[in-house]
Image 1 (spheres, rainbow, N blue to C red):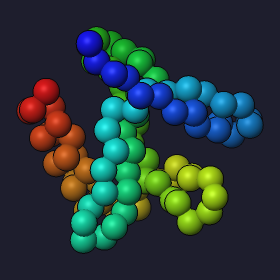
Image 2 (image 1 turned 30 degrees about the vertical axis):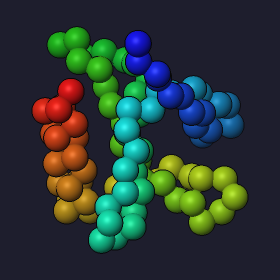
Image 3 (image 1 turned 120 degrees about the horizontal axis):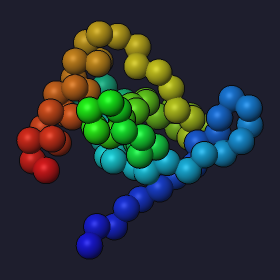
Image 4 (image 1 turned 90 degrees about the vertical axis):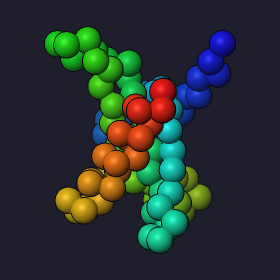
Length: 87
């Protein structure tokens, strides 16, 4: 049996939404942390939609941020491909 992990994100309207954590990771060279999560939505092909955000821990409450560059996206996609290959 899998142990699913959940966390809450604060939406723009101030409400909290519980989402399922897929994976979190950090790149050693940049020390940037990322989180991959899902709301368990399915697309037209039956695939689960995933969301990726950077994590900013510079304050008491971690905040989700954007992915800033194509290079950053490319590296994240490499991690996701490895995850898919190994699962």
